[in-house]
Image (cartoon, rainbow, N blue to C red; front, top):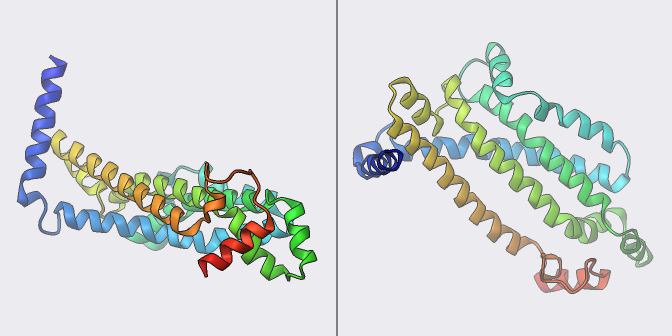
Length: 247
C-alpha cells in the first residue's frame, strides 16, 4: 500500500511540476526560486565579507582566534527561527529579519575554516617566504591564502548549504523564497506542493554544489587539490610556479 501511495505521490508531483501555471506569476516556481537564490546569496556574501578577513588576520597573527570563534558560534547555537522572531520587532517583517538570521548562521563555518586553514600553513613554508624577502602582506596573499584556499572554500560551501536549507524559514516572516511553497502547501494540506517545494530546494543545493566544484577547480592550484599533489604540503617553489602560471 505504501509503495502505491509513493508512486501516486510522485506522479502527482510530476503533474504539478509539468503544469505551466505553477511556474508563472508572483507565486510561480521561477519567481520563488529567484527569491530563494537572493535570500541565500546575500547572507553568504555578507558572511564572507565579515568572516574571511577576520579569519585571515587572526590566523596569520595567531592571536584572538578562540574569542572570535566563540563569539561567532553564538549564531550556530541560537536557533535560526528564534533569531527571526527576535529580529522582527526591530526590523519588521520581510527579508531583513531573514538576512539577520542567515548571516548569523553563515559566519561560523566560514570563520572557523578560514582561521584553522591559516593556522595550518606549514611554518617552514612561511619561514622560507620571509627568507625570500616577502612582506607580511605578500606572504598572506601569495603563500598562506593559496595554501588555505581549499579549506576556506569548504567552509563557504558548508555555510552555503546550511543557508539554502534554512532560508525556507524566511517564508514565516513574509520574505518569500521556496519556503513559501512549503508553508502555503502545509496551510491547505497540499502535500504535492510541499514535496515540490522541497524538491526545488534540493535541486538548488545540487546546482550550487556543481558551481562550487567548478569554482574550486578555477581558484585552487592543481598542486593543492586533493589527490592531485604527490606531497601533502607543496613547497614554496610549487606555489610560486602556480602563481606565475595563473598569471
